[in-house]
Image 1: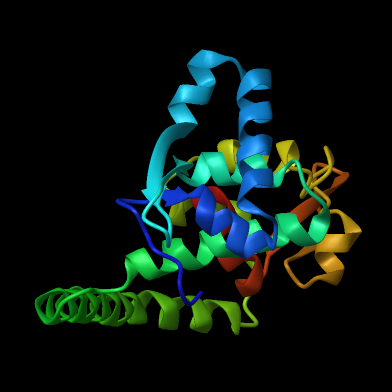
Image 2: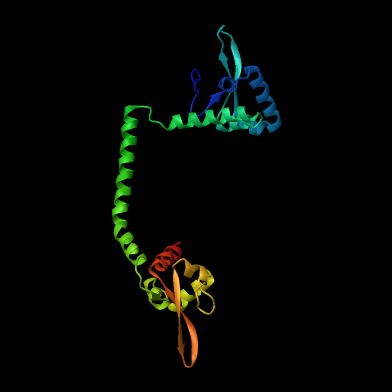
Length: 217
């Protein structure tokens, strides 16, 4: 990147593009003018700005200034390697803009980063009891009924059953789908009343944790 001169803000010049791509500056000027003729005046003037520079012989010569849009617009004209060089240049320049330029800016950035770390640490500490409770439930061998689990979610038994059916966890008969049984989320038992047999959905500790995450989403 040696020798490249940033003009202002995030604007760079056609001279830099010539250096990056290995093309003659006259070729870059020709290509920019061709691109402008195709884009039309309104768009062209929003991404390209005609300017000039003084060459080694003290002569004033034309050049163009352009921001990221102009660079990418020109990159689309060229072959893959040239296009890559243009995109790579833009990314490096944008990364350089994000770095602190003075000692005071560096201190400010360090302070902001320290604050973010402190906030993240506090969030982790606050989440520990919840995480530990989830782990205890997840590792539990206890099976819970839909009525018991619905109470944890502050919803009715029939509401939770409707949700389980809607998202294809259980069939209309209340028997869980086999894949969720195999995954260790659900189980079932067969009960009977008034001479009639029926399925009873059972939810494992792992299943409770899974449903908590899904319902929260």
